[in-house]
Image (cartoon, rainbow, N blue to C red; front, top):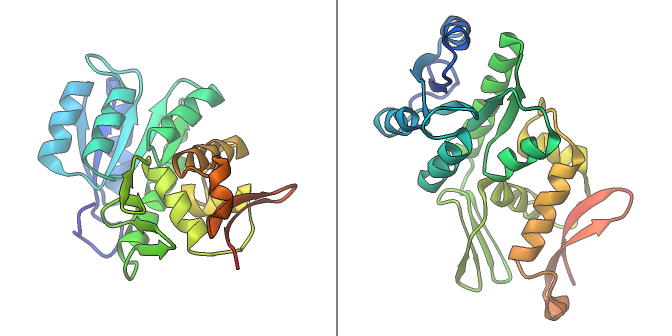
Length: 241
């Protein structure tokens, strides 16, 4: 994210949508809030605009000409951690989870209230700014290294392939060792207080984290830390005595 301001005012927003009516509505509402707004009408144009503008946040439709939103999101995530809000007419929960697993920060279904979307933009930007201001953004726990500045996780020196939201969830849990969080608390902390999602999103990310960290391996039982399920409550990053 650009270090252009200490607040969300004036942030550079890239809107990717091929519907001119939606683009005009978003231009009016975002400009009214002081955002610098730019537009792309297809996937290829979106990637070119992203490279040229280095936006602070991307509002990304899924059903796009030339290159769909899934591919655009995936390619942006290969380049960095710019916040992405997916915008689509698809309302299935599996599609919402898929978008979040690709690294999207939020998901809004059409038709939408422009005021709600603007509120989500502000919330995501505030969270990103807060993360940018963290003291170090790094944690190390018995062979596990989490670096939020580089968006890297290493286990005994080996770089792991974690999606951005997996890394943020791991960082949040590891920042509060042995504290139990409900699924709703984790949704609020990692996806945002106004994120309208399902607890399945957390479950899927926890399962992926455990697999990528090798915690499902019987040999991991001797590891000094674990991500454990507290049945009927939620999850915790357990640091063993």
